[in-house]
Figure: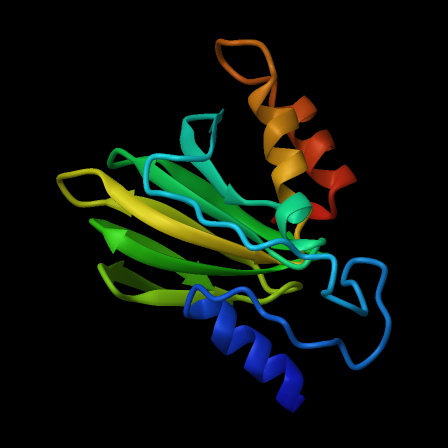
Length: 179
């Protein structure tokens, strides 16, 4: 792993928004972070979205970070899960704040508890399920940003049982496929 990529991953895992310049220009990542404005987000703030039962609160989005990172807090009851899937465009970090989250990344399954985290790099299958007796709270960090737009689109689908071919089609447009 290149040093700058390692530093970005490490800082993102710690909950920090990176201010490093990319090694090469990328349309998803600005070459200059001068356009960024400071932002403080309190615990009860953020845009709330229900994505097929996954209760999300967007804390930071691409609009806040010039496309660098999205930070989402998830708060779910036991049994909520996302089946195995692969991202083509973003890496994800899951950091458990409360409760227990069973995570499978690249074929390895473990149960994470408060303070634990997992890294799901793009191109590697991963899934998760809330386990245990109580609510699980997780901070999801995705970089670069953009995944929040997909979550908004899925969250806007009509109430009731989801039309999974429609959901899979939306995900595919954002470079996510279920395996």
